[in-house]
Length: 386
Ligand code: ADP
Image (cartoon, rainbow, N blue to C red):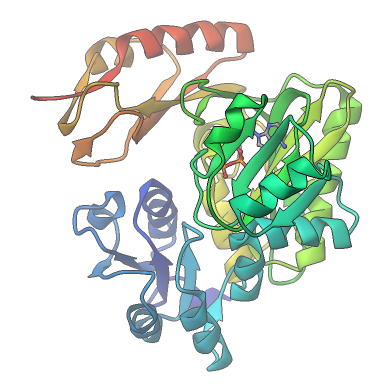
């Protein structure tokens, strides 16, 4: 594999958001040349990659031509043109994670069918094709309130998800091919990042706990390690390994899970790429999720995922009521706090709740890290100049 790094090895990364940027940064440590495809010239990864190619990653020809320029392709988002990737793979291009797996995961319905087929614990569900079918299912009582409607494709960060808790909430139903899930009585939301390399070696990162912002469905705080008992931790870790093994997937896979009030562990959803729930690994673990992804797809041994120091990660979201050219308030004050690692993604414009950066707070005590994180949240604000 040595020839893959150094010299002229070209890694194509589809999309240049913050995840692509952090992946390109990890790749630069090994002198890998990174080629980024993104429609926005000023995307976060554009200043870090070796080559930037402007283009729409949903377009077949654009993805196909991009693929021809590089030695290997990976991606930092799921919503990309898979047909072009499948064609490139048939022509011998190395693509990790494998595009056929991405096809299953892109569709929340087929994702659930996969769990069912492989006896991976998940909430009960039905697949329905329209709002009308959902209303019919409600009237013939094959589904009952409360339930969750998820559009099968193109949802993200809570968009395309509606929780229906009352008869009045039926008005919120969305039109489209839907996954209808039984409402889970959630105690905690946790995540496990797992990697599998080209030789089939598998390693997980320590389980993290996610706390969501209740207004928008975005992670507000990520706590590593999660405050869960050993049994739940074991189950979560085993489920993550079972999923990546069942897919025989190469690369990094983020597995989001629910711990129910009864203490069951259920898979919510998965993402075959570096993930928001792994940001803390850059400073908190011996190997970052980005380095691990590269190790996995390049066929190296997987790195040590042990925690160096516990952490609390907070997303820096655009403040409500501010849109336009970004300005950050409170940076100087935050830099003075011990153990604070600030990541600014470099997005030129802010919007309410847009992910503009994150801060990882390192501390030997989680309680003290939480206190510092609270302080950072109150000081550091993402606003606009106008
Ligand atoms: P997205 O892909 O947009 O992140 P998710 O499927 O993760 O959407 O759902 C967003 C959030 O909705 C979850 O983090 C969880 O809080 C809630 N949720 C999703 N599915 C269920 C469910 N079956 N029962 C209860 N809450 C759910």
